[in-house]
Image (cartoon, rainbow, N blue to C red; front, side, top):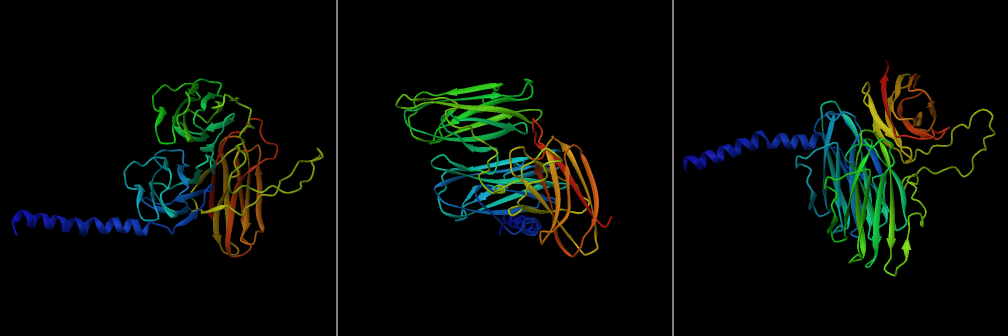
Length: 420
């Protein structure tokens, strides 16, 4: 064996000894057991250390498309960035986890799945402080209907009028509409922010075969944007992507006008407005009957369904941040494990927004250990004693008790300390 070849073999052996075991260790020790998600479900999870990997699965059929969105909750960009990968049931890598393009928001769109079965999702966190994120599984059907767990992905139709909110700059919203050959369509989006600097927009349109009809990334964003097509050459689901730039969360309105192939004009408002308060999945079931408020005293609290709450372990002494939207049915649950007689100290504060928030602590038997409402205040501190050993859930949710006239998405922070 020549000296050069021997040197190459030695270098390869050293690489395998030094680096491969380390990568395998990171992957195996920091990975959790897979969590099954369904179309339309959202789940908040927490990274407590660097390079952790969270795994999820979703059972999907080849007649749908998957739109996966993961967004970091922390406000400081440096606290947490993520990367996301997707694998088909046969092991085919649809999107790589280790491609180095980690960010505070990641989206994977897998159009027209090729096989039925269990798709595997991995999300890796890069952090020196810990932080939380939300993953949402959205499913698009061939008729243009969407089963979504977020305001970022929706289906629309001719005559639709939709108001929506951009919560962070650079955020992309995905709209899908089924149109027929010969139809003409006009999309118009308008910023509802009073200050020009609050929200500017751009939109792009793609045909069912992926052909780009109008570019999203052409740099000509404005307060009002419009796309108007000639007669469409094919039937199918068209994708409208909207991107917003804002210094704060800001609202916009989308209107869809169609001239059908037979000449019929469908104007905005001809179909009922799309209500984003109606969640497509895991919605809180309203009570069948409610007491009528007489005007004396206060309305009180309606029942809150915790059946589908995603529970997140809360590290003691570490502030956890989350957000509640004006239109969703989010209930964010934090798990506290303790023994009989332990004292729990909770510090709860509003970071931004104006929604009324509720905080409740339930035992595993659904007994109420603590409950409070944050209607006008911004901070709440309490201590209580656990009556028995076991698991408790601290849930944060929106209160529709005397809601503000102009509701805003509300960020909060919760810190738990055991036996302070």
